[in-house]
Structure formats: C-alpha cells, structure tokens
Image (cartoon, rainbow, N blue to C red; front, side, top):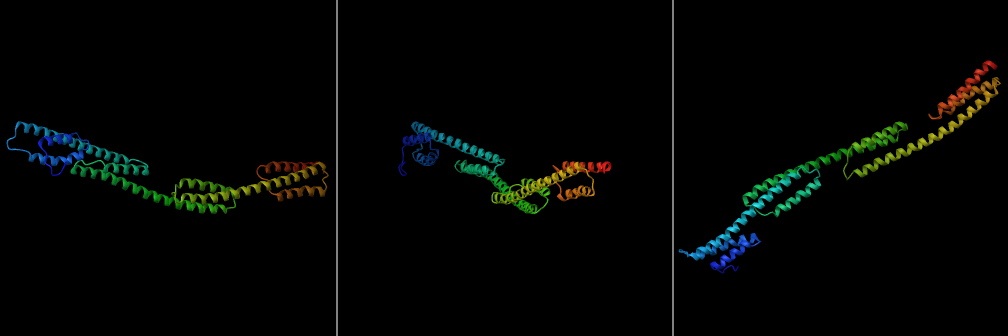
Length: 298
C-alpha cells in the first residue's frame, strides 16, 4: 500500500479482508494501525446504511485479526511454558555434555518463539532463566568436583607408582608379588585422574609392573634351574648311599663315607618343595637301613 494514498471504504474493507486471510500475521498486524487511521478519516456524522454495513465488515475483519493475535499470543505463551518444563527436565540429566547441548537448543528455540506480550514475556523469561542458572551452577559445581576428584586420583596414583618402584627393589619375590597385586587393586579403586593425566600415569605404573614380573619370572626360572641341579645332585648322593648299603662292608672307611653323605646332602641345599621331602625320605631310609644292618652284621 502506498504510504500517502487514501483508500476508499471499499478498498479498506477489501484490504482488511486480505489481511485477515494472510498467513503473515505479524505483517498484517503491523498494517492494521494504518488502516484504522484511514477508516476514521472516511467516517461521517450521519452514516448511511451502506456506511454501517461497510463498518461492520471492516471491523469484523479486524476482529478476526485480533482473534488470531490472541491465539498466537496464547500459543507463544504455551510454547514458552513447555520450554520451561523441558528445561526443568534437563536438570535431571546425568550426562552434562548431553544436557548442555539440550539446554542450548532450548535457548535457540526460546529466541525464535515470538512474543506473548511484554509482561508475560518478562515473567516467563525470569522463570526460564532461573532454571538455566540453576543448571549451569550445578554443572560448574559438578566439574569443580570432578577436577578435584581428578587431582586426588592423580596424587594417589603417583604415590602408587612410587610404591611399585619400592616393590621392584624387594628381594622376597613372594612378598613382592603379593604387594604388587595389592597395588593393582588400589589402582582400580583410585578412580580416573582425567584424560590429561590418566594415560601417562598408567604407562608409568604398567612399566613398573612389567619390570617386576620380568624380574620375578627370571628369578623363578633361575630357582627352577637351581632346584633341578640340586635334585640331580641329591639323586647322585642317594645312588652312592644305595651302593654303600648294597656293599655293606661296614669298615671304618665305609662308615665314614656314609656319614659324609649327610654332610654332602646339607651342602647341596634344598631341592624345592616339589622334590625335597621325597628325596629326603628315600635318602634317610637308606641311611637308617644301613646303620640297622650294621648292628646285626657289623
């Protein structure tokens, strides 16, 4: 519509009808004020029947627009109230990453939700903002606690790494193994030190554990080899004892030799739990038999 052109009543009614049917309510409402001004300028003190009919049509179309405006305002209000309820629901979300994305999306919706009137908008915004403020305060507290938790976990794991180094210096492999396993349980309970530190701490701790188990394996391999040699040495002593028992001459030289086998047995040392008792029982029974025979035949 040209800004300075005055329309006739017919034209104003026609335009009011077009605006009442328009899909662009905002633009239509913006033009209504100008239409009202022009309509007042077309009035007369004594209106004819025609004027009254035209007036009824004109204001009837404006009433339609007013109804649409009221409906739109109500819709905006309801929509904003729905956004507030969604925001309250987000307060219960356990994942703050997911919750933050959802809260930001609600903010974008709020910005484009339109107006429900200044007074209503202000009241609704205050409620919506209060929920958002509560959410971000909770999130800040959560991440502060998380940061503090990461710090405590980092310090605990640094201490466990130092303990692992001390265990690596221990000589008793059984005690050291038990201690290292206990450290692993403590590590699991210590919690995460955060993405920034966790990987490096685990690398250091794992290196100490690997070094220990490599040392322990080497120790037990050496022990196994040593026990095997001692087992063989004791079997040879048993073979000598059997030979002396079978010969049974009971001379001073032979008795001295049989007694000397006991000293050799002690010098060899333990052959390990797996073989020691069996070997000793066999060896000792031969010696006992020898000296028992000596009583009767010596």
